[in-house]
Structure formats: C-alpha cells, structure tokens
Image 1 (cartoon, rainbow, N blue to C red):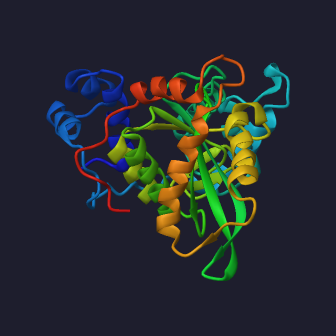
Image 2: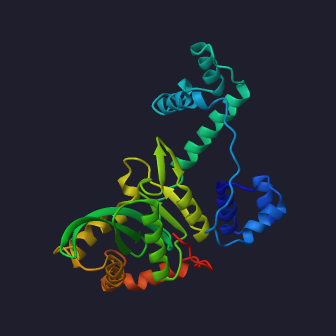
Length: 307
C-alpha cells in the first residue's frame, strides 16, 4: 500500500501525460500498482498509509537544517558539504552514531528540495492557474456582529476572482471553499498558489507538511500546489489585491445575513457580475478572458469529495 505522498506523485505524473510503465520506472514501484492508482479517481475513503520508520538521524536533523539555512548567507566555497556536516556532528556530540551515508543522503535531499522550492514559482501566469489567500471582514448574522474569514481564489491571467465566507481557516474550511468554487465554475485549476500553509498544513522553515485531509482532497481533485516564498509579495500580488477589492466592494456596508450557506451561493453570483469590467491591461472584459481560464481547467472528478 502506497503512502498519500506517493499517490500524489503518481497523479502529478499522470497529469503530465506519463503512462503506467514510465511512472513505475520513475518512482520504483510495480507497474500494476501504478495502473491501479491511475484508474482511481475517488480518494474520499480511508487509505492505509505505510508506516515510515524512524531514522537514526531524526534527532540531529534540526541542527543540520540550521547549518544549511545559515549557508544561504555564506560564500559558496564556505558552505557545508555532507562530509563537513558529518565531521561536525561527530566533533560536537559524543553520542552521535550515524553513518556517513545517512548524513550524505539527507544533506543531498535538503539541497535538492531547496533548489526546487526556489525555482517552483514563475511570474508568468498561464490560463488555468489560480492564487489563493485569506481575508477578514465583519458581518451581521441574525442580528449578531461577527468576524468571518473570506477566502479568495483569483485567476491572474483573466483577473477573475471568487470568494466564500467561513468561520475559520481550517483544512475543512479550505477544502469546502475550493470544492464549492470548483463546482460553480465547472472545473479544477491546474495549479493553485497559496500565500502560506494556514489551513492546509504546517510550515517549519521552508518545509511544508500538508494535512492529511487536504492531501487527500488534492489527490481527489488532481491539482498542483506551490507556496509563496517568504517576503515575496510579487508572487501573490493578484490575489492580495483581490482580497482588498472584494472587501471594499462586497462587504461595505457590513452585510446583514440570515444564512451563511445561502449567502455564499449569492457571493459566487455577485463575483461573476463583476466580470463585465474591462481588464486593467488587456483591453478585453474579465468575462471573456475568464472563458479562456475555464477552457484550461481540468475536469471535475466523477464523485464529489465528502469534506
């Protein structure tokens, strides 16, 4: 039985057009296993995950990570090699008993992961790409004033955006928010860029671990995700502007509502009514440009996901 991360890799390669034989060779798995997960399009049910054994190096990894992070500010020739990491650990800790090969493998994995993370975000947005971010606003629900989170999904190529309101930023809220928008627009973005890991996982330095619910949801709908680099506002400028635009134009004056679910449905319609505006740079309406986004979306799965 594969882990959810392995299944996610299979579905990512499937989206790129690879077949079962190529995927099996790339991931080092059985071809029949690859074929089984290629055919599967419902990840709503429990998937038993392989227990990952504890590494002898686990207790030393935070120290290694701190050295590698510090290296980013140092000259290239004065950065840690795997051999130097191994030697320092032996010098500093009398109880260090890991082999050099374990240290070498881990250092290599971290350096590759860092390079991939730094090169993963492009500022050229294709149709079908989306950005996600969270805003905050007040509403009056059944006579009671309360603060809600408005989650915004924007499409930079067309400048279209949709919002939904929830009580928080949990994984359940994020998955329901995305599913409602996917169903409304009739498809799934190819890639979603998140500002941070709030609601979908946990960030420790540059490493993001997705929550099981969101990872299962991601496998089910088949989209890719990337996270913005810290202090890189240019990577999420479109959705940040949309959060402010929606707050000023849809939440002023403070909305008075009776039912949050019904209001969310109205919000989707209200968002589309705004598409009649002309794009700020392209000379076409947002509505006509969004049709190109819609044409680039992946199909909805055959079964919904039970958030």
